[in-house]
Image (tube, rainbow, N blue to C red; front, side):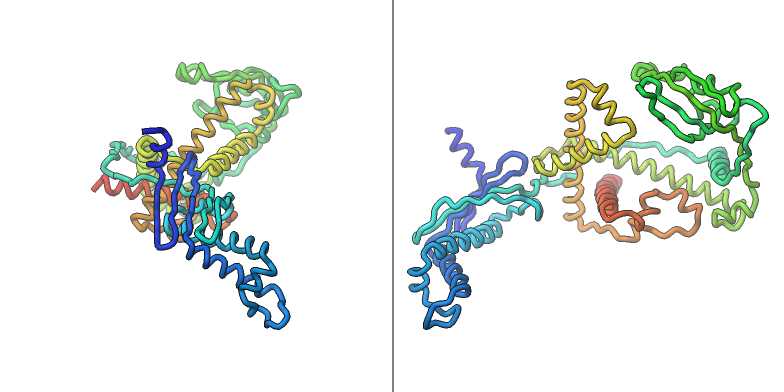
Length: 443
């Protein structure tokens, strides 16, 4: 069998009373429809052309729109020919697409048209455009559910959370009569001295001078220094970091300016503080916080299960995706990357051509995964008739405490732009599809 014959076998053929359609699928969801219409199809196209011309021209002795076809064909042969081609093309695309069921990707998609032949016996036209991806059937039995341990929430965790909440509502005393010591909070400006001129990496950033809260090299620089003083040094990984972290860590020369030394004044842990969080008493607050931490832990487990399902989707389902959408997503991610502080300068000055190409390939690969994941989840949503309500996207909250533990995207949904809301809707939709698979596997 020749290569041409093998290719022809892959094409889809459809036919009805008056047309035949051949669907030629190419890479990246590009498709060509070749629509062939018989003599009746051409005759209807000519009728449409003559009717449109009659509405536009005036022929002496005839009311507008009532001139005989024979006169119109004689007086306006080029207009009749062009109108017939247009009517044939419009009708052929509509009927051919309805028969072959190959949707155009979206309203912005470009459709390339070519008239192959047209006479009284019949006509043939081709239409090329991007179409929707053909997502394979989703077989839930191919997924597996990882066992993820749910950590117990103890009283110590609840107390730690309460301390964080008190810190959120703390007032601050400025220390001026002594240097920085362990346990203080310091407000710093930090400059990157490896760049010329130096670039400010942090401005008015508050750090807690405490083990596991501040890098060891930074503690060494600030402890013993007073408000207004400056210290220079080199950033480096902590001694107890993993070898992998140490290997990847990039040291930098930095300058630290100590703007203020501060001590927090925490609110009393009483019913008055509980009321600020919307809770009746401090005892009820502790109870509610523990319940919210339990829910938070359950949500973490669900999030890890979703991530596992997403990875399995990537492994199980490979299909062509539209080149235009891939380009749009990759460009969006590249633009977001270069908007990160200092990234444009780093890209231009530090990245080698090989590193740039590697990063572009990584972005393209991540974009492909994200797009396929979207289409797989959308198929599940459609097939299972799953719905997403506005109350799920933007729930109401009973107390300030509930709001503080909620997903920020849910809290601020109504205040976001239409574009951001659409993005959040897509994320929520995909999570719902993944939850459906998890639910089926757990059954």
